[in-house]
Amino acid sequence: MEIRGGMELVRDVLDKGLCVDCGGCVGLCPYFRSHKGRVAMLFDCNLEKGRCHAHCPRAEVDLDAVSKKLPGGHYTGEPAGRFLRMVKARAGKKMVGRASYQNGGTVSSLLALAFDTGLIDAAALTDRKGLMPLPRVVTDVAGVLACASSKYMASPTVGAVHEAVAEGFRRIAMVGTPCQVTSVGQMRCDSLDRSETDPVTLTIGLFCTWALDARQFSDLVPDGVDAGAVTGMDVPPPPASVFSLHTPDGTVNLPLESIRNAIPDGCRVCPDMTAEFTDLSVGAMEGDTSWNLLICRTEVGDALVEMAVSRGYLDTDPVDPAQADRLMEAAAAKKARALLKAREDGGLNSEEGPSMFRVAPAVVDKIMNRGRRSLASGRCDEPSA
Image: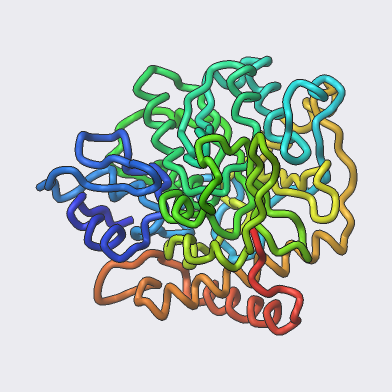
């Protein structure tokens, strides 16, 4: 992992439009701040190496090194990464009715159990004020339930991890998108970090094909819609092809194609759809949004799911093999598209300058071959969300 300074981070990531506002560089020093979906450097910094650069998920990410920080070892390029099992899941009887869950309520249920059993003492989550996502440190189940909804916006949530650490918490859960949890993986690889223990006890990843730049998306909201009054948002399953904003006066549907210009360029080079570098990964269930797809990746995550089922926090069922296959095809296609784009932009295994990603050539070939088959099948055009 080659670590450089803040000025190089600006040159290699921010100035190239690759920043995804994950928050990895926020809250570490006075120089970087996030405001309305954009990260900016407030003052020049003369440090040759900094944690801002070390934590960035778009700067010199050695995917093998990040992968080896979790049980299981090397980065193999499998479509959804390494995992122990995949199940359908939803809030169990102990959690039903406690919040308005957007999908199955799986993430909220798992975090509630983690707090109730003392596994964690804080959680870094994403809240929302109108359209704008807000990183938030919560310390109890009520805080978890207050954040229970999908945001679809790039958010500096990793900054909430830094905030929780600064406040003295040492058993932190982090819920985030693939770029955000990759930043946590970068933190674990950071040679500048002198802490003896990893403060992030539990990572829960969210399936993601893209997020939106909150500032650009705000400009696309129709006149007459009070952005500050938005109560929720959703991307209904195909063939709807709309992005829905829920307000006290009803639902406003925007054509899905109209919002694609608000997708940051940094999303287009993301090779991870299912948040691989986590203990657990959760996504919406295709065809039945009352359930989630839940991927158990580590022993810690799997044990938490088993406990959640036995104590009534979670219900689980087997996954339809055809749906699992469709997820793998979509994840494989995203990997191939992203690495192809990164290579075209000179950001994959560059020998002459900085790279976004470092990946073993044999693994790159494997990803490209599998991804081409997925794209050629006709079943895996770029997913809507």
